[in-house]
Image 1 (cartoon, one colour):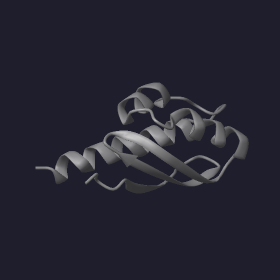
Image 2: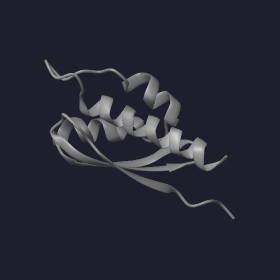
Image 3: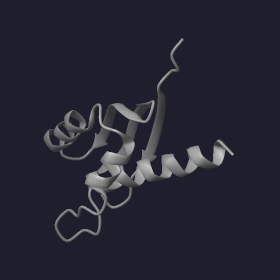
Length: 93
């Protein structure tokens, strides 16, 4: 029997997208939903990250900025996944 996907929700800060919801299974992104923000760009991100490992998404997206803003939707997604990993580590102890 395979384990169910874990769905996490993340409230963003400093971006047009207000909330992200990410489905993860076995360390890989199954799907993502973005509420608010630039629909076309966020659909592109969703399509690109599907099937990628959590670590690879963090590595590729962390630190990306949106114009003069100190963050971006991709950066917020990386922050969401970093938080997920930290919580997973503390729960497994």
